[in-house]
Length: 231
Image (cartoon, rainbow, N blue to C red; front, side, top):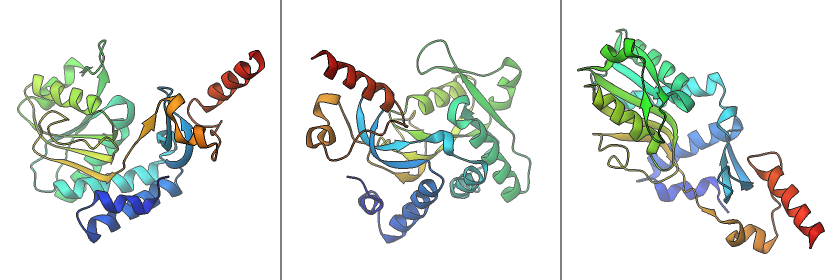
């Protein structure tokens, strides 16, 4: 079972460990980082759930500042985030960077494309990234496909990605995984193990029930009850 102390393994020393504890504490207090027994959207089971809808404005602003201070003096000229998850983070990151560097830094969001992992931006905004140093931000990274899609979009339109920022890197992503960018910074690196239903140790041991209020938990429990009645 995952606890905050497990993140010590993810850091490079006590300072890193303390920073991750601080951020995880913020996420837990706001109801974003949950531990228990959850059924994910994919149907897989996990002891961790990132309830991103609970990320309130005050918390998002605070976390964005913790990220962007690591990119001061990187000559960032525009901030981009995927529309789902990164829209307001891009706005807040640009706001903080503008204040810290005492110059106006614009932001924009990338909309999901018709094909998986692809993104697009309004034609009117292409000039905002062409030839510019761009910072990409998102809330979480698991496979890296969303961030990589945004990075490739920026590059396609002639922008130069100077770095990527994440609140939570739950997939052990590297700079190469998100488009071979110069720098990837995540406030926390959380091991995000999940299992197929029939291999879930929590189900096998029966010690922690599935949470019916999170993810696909309710659907799972209804299905299991129907299977029990039909057997």
